[in-house]
Image (cartoon, rainbow, N blue to C red; front, side):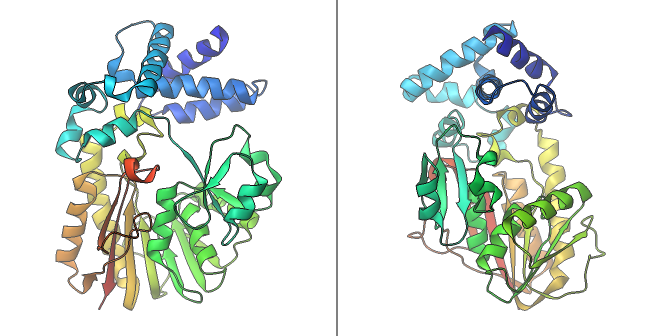
Length: 371
């Protein structure tokens, strides 16, 4: 274990704003191929537990801090309420968060728990996949499964056959909020490596057309590999830097802007980001998000649906972006949508998905119809 903690300590010490801990973990495991799956899990656990409890740590030696973090995690698991509310408010997130996020004590407690791992099976195949994979259980959404096993899912025959994707439950909810119809034309404007595009394609039964764009060519290359494995062929990909010059003159039935954001909603899964994200980042990203929405607006058909989603919970990247867009584009009318994770709740044009409710990432979604 000491050898593994030596590796974890180096990763912790080398982690910073420019080189996040999760990126260093990937690089380390790629270099040290002799490590077993159990050893890589132990190292990852040590790194993420350290950053999850960093605000509480008192020791100065990294090895001792890792042990202290594990002790705190064990205490929290046994009795979460042994940590007073004010103690959590002081140590779980940076001070600037209080002015940007509705930091309920339930959210803060959730941030201190290890995250869930979610899968999305092919449409209509959730129960069948759960029977094939040990420790996979259907939850909350059609074909969403929570996975509690230790198997390397990327090596399973089901993964290579394209039977499922690793996709957070909150991201799956975005696809259902979009509600694309078979035969429609959609644009996934910030497609990244294609997680939400694959879901849109599945909901459209691989019919119609989806344009996928991103500013990074390497992401679109990853998307190409993922779509091939998933047998999703109803898409075209194009580079787009987010500017006023669009990648196509096509008019769309729907546009999804899953915008770059501060990722505050992912802090349970990525605790290192709590200590590198700044208020300036949030403000800059809010400006970028407003520009993206303004630039995609002309591409909607009359009656088309625009969906804005971000895996963050800050005011500057959610309600302030929405208010700015609606002032600039009054022809876009807020349209009430149902939160798929809370179908009993009233429909609303603004959906907040909190980790303590969903068991996944935090997410904000807004929807409009173009008159």
